[in-house]
Amino acid sequence: MARVVALFEQLTPASLARLGEVYADDARFIDPFNDVTGLAPIRRIFEHMFDTLQAPRFTVLTRFSAGDEAFLSWDFRFRRQGAQGDELLIHGASHLRFDADDRVLLHRDYWDAARQVYEQVPLLGAVLRWLRLRLAAR
Image 1 (tube, rainbow, N blue to C red):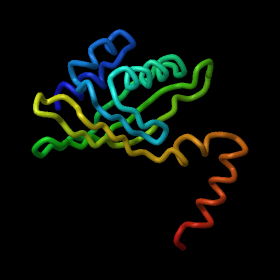
Image 2: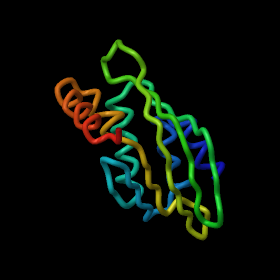
Image 3: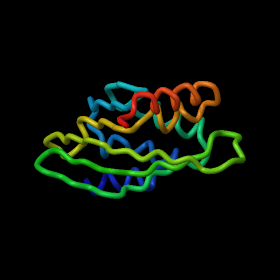
């Protein structure tokens, strides 16, 4: 798991060439926007991240492993491309499953896309915030 944490905390466009050291060839990656299998599609997701965001970076906050599985909690900080405003933060967690060679076979990210992304969109955000408040327990 230390290799995975190091990869993510030091992730750069150049380090994407080393994904195969950490991910199995047939690894599956799932997050709120993607569900892909294979190194090339996983690499494209991270390339897209670097193409569309300014200074994206992960900080792993906690880690837990048992057998061939691990869980990480993390903060992802970035700015929108061309934006001069504040840095944005997504707090999330990852479930990882490793193969016999200790490479990631499954990487599933959990984070609240509605609250942490969609609510930041001007008109859509207002509707989603109103809906969240209406559905909240009182």
